[in-house]
Length: 170
Image (cartoon, rainbow, N blue to C red):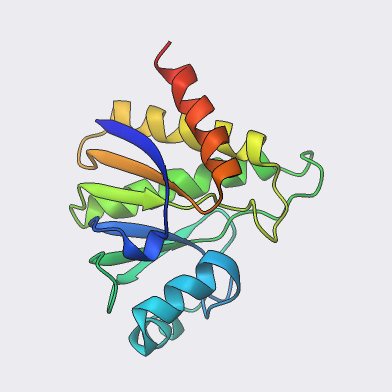
C-alpha cells in the first residue's frame, strides 16, 4: 500500500477514482465540488440527479465522465460545530465508505481532497489527522485499493498532510 500527499488539481489526476467533497444534494456546489462538476461535464450532474442525495458520512459513486479518473466517489463531510457533535466519527466514515466503494469497483488508485476543511470549516490539523489515520487503518485491513493520494489545493494544507504522513512512518 502507498499513501502520499501532493498539491495539485484533483480533476487532473490520472487515478482510478477521485473523491468529491460533496454536499447532501450531490448536485454541485463550490470549492472542489464545483471544480469536479465543471471538469466532468453535464453527464456528472445527470448521474448525480439519479442518486437521490447522500447523507453526511456516507458516499455514492458515479462514472468520471470527462475526467481522467474512471469514477467519482461523492462523500458528504460534516460541518464543523466545535467538535462535540460527532464530527470526527462522521469524517472518518467518509473515508471508510469512500474506500469501500473504490474497492467495490476494483479501483486500485484513489485520490481524496481535504474533506470538510473548506466552507464546512473543519480545522485542517484535526481533519488531516483523521483522514490519514482512517485511510491507513482501512488499507492495512483490506485489499483492493493499493494507492491513496491526498490531493491538497493549498500549500498550507499540503504541509499539514505531509506532517501527518511523516508521523505514520515513525
